[in-house]
Length: 329
Image 1: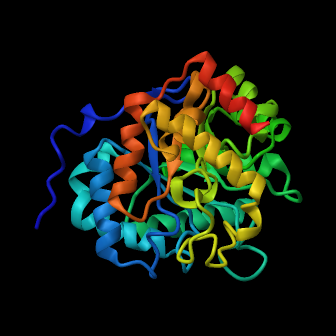
Image 2 (image 1 turned 180 degrees about the horizontal axis):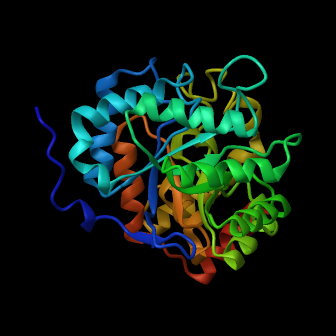
Image 3 (image 1 turned 45 degrees about the vertical axis):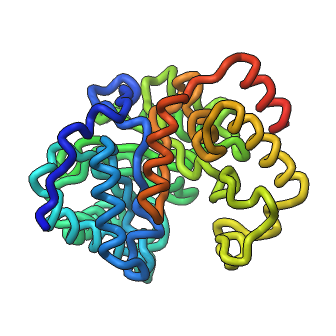
């Protein structure tokens, strides 16, 4: 059946200015990380994308190495784009990244000009696109001069292969330098993508303030701490859960008795607020409007519904924030 997008899709979403740019992002963005590779049924990936867009999620976040195997998420997305979303291309913000290992040898990793530009060319071919809306350097490279990496980002914008550029996983001081270099080159940094959740708050140590001061947006990945900030582990670790599967992204050792007790206390606050813990955790990351968008992953359409449902109750009282803070410290 030919996909027809929901005509009311923009009524359910909140769109937020990304830094001092002209671009607005949905408060919730969808990451095509682990549920869009070759190990996932294509029809499930298609249903996730359709549901997301029908709810106003216009920003789809990819990277060269997403899968598994690396590259397959972009290939599968490219097929779904051709079959379902080509009429809506100009309503979508599609991002990709390069910075982690993608191919063998000295030119398939980190932050050299050769790697970044070659990788974006490959990503565009996999997705069947002429350009991406946002292209990120995925992580800092301790050996390549920062100026070379930023000049590569500047180049892909001038070549028309990306409309905007961003950085990911950069600590505060290095992010400030990268942003200044890009400003001097005439290609402003649009956005920074850091890991941020109730359980991982390093961005509060200066990064968020730098981004605000320099007019750069932010999008938080892993806002649910790999699934810890859900109702999945309230009664321990289920045998069929991610934590029990040996996943490198969440393991049983992380779910200490102290951590689980915090989860239960947070869940009690969420219940008083009339929402799921996952919804409250997303709303918390967006509190104070320092973060532009939260980046979710999903394996079921119901998880997308839950995330968007958070917008009905995303603000906190001062008392609630104080109570949450007392749990987290």
